[in-house]
Length: 479
Image (cartoon, rainbow, N blue to C red; front, top):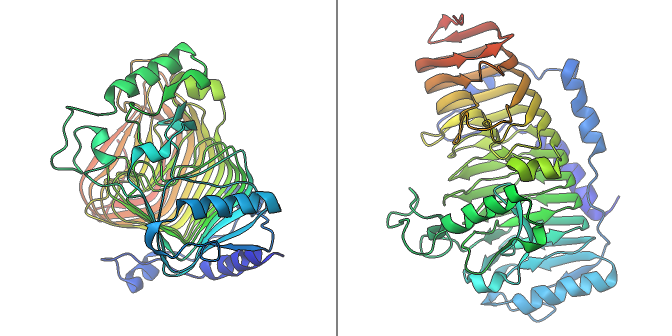
């Protein structure tokens, strides 16, 4: 067992015993609200199979210390030293790039196979907020559409055995002066508007290109297009580990793995409140573990995706076999979200023992799609979920954005929620399928919502099963 794998194994064992705690939800109340850990039987028997199939990266036992290569860690631009360390690792066949305590400014960091970027405690990487530094364009996926765009800040393409680890801080450098205004008018930046340099023209042009089947290599949307890059993106990679680090101030989505297999995201904190600052968005990935993480974001905490519209159907790779456990969700548009870029489908998602709470958390569980996205979404299991404060508890919405305007009805079935406890919500449910394509097999067991402003809406659901569910202290019986 390599040093990396030994550390990961020990931390995994410790994480299994940790009860996450959120501000405003006392640990004692949390422990009392939760039933004993259920066994892995029935559909949950698949969880051990998924976990056993996930391979951690194998990193050679050699270090490339940034300070030994000449970096001082005193706030200087250390781009050349990061590049030298990556090249040294590539030439040697892999190793660990060690970032000692200190402050380092840099442009994009492109990792290669068999390489770990490791931040020691007290290390800070601050990305330079100069868009020109993130050229030339690379292959990326932006809102579910493949294109050639600005380089993600930390990026790997077609790499095996890559890792981002440590106790340090990674700051994407985005704020309301740089990157975030490209969204156009948004609630995160008080002075933002749709005038000037915004993403809107390029976003529409990219969608038109994708619908028209323009080859990806010809979809050039970097300089002058104002489509913001994610902070971390591993694209078409195998055996990926992201562990321990704190990620802040991302231009766009924070962690965005695409077309990856064997992905572990563990004990990570994402804290970014800009527009579209999703925490972790595995897209068209297979065999995924997300555990022990804290998400405090300006958009979805975890959003599971698989491509958008015609482009998602062209690539046609679902996200499947996902385990989410022992995570905390604070601010965000949703705690666990499936969609909206979901045309390739999502299946076999298991979430357990998580805690959510914030006056700025819009939804606990959410599936968002429409008749343009479509997608086959099935075998989604959630249990032992404790929610303090949220606006909507469970949302399944086929009318997201474009609504009922396309020819690709979503196919959503076999969704099971059990042992959910929510203290306070504005609304319990917002569940709307299509009458011609209803949500099938929605099951809610042994759950309660102590205070809800309203029950909400449940429409176009066939095979709805509700057992031992209470809202406002009364047994809930759907009409």
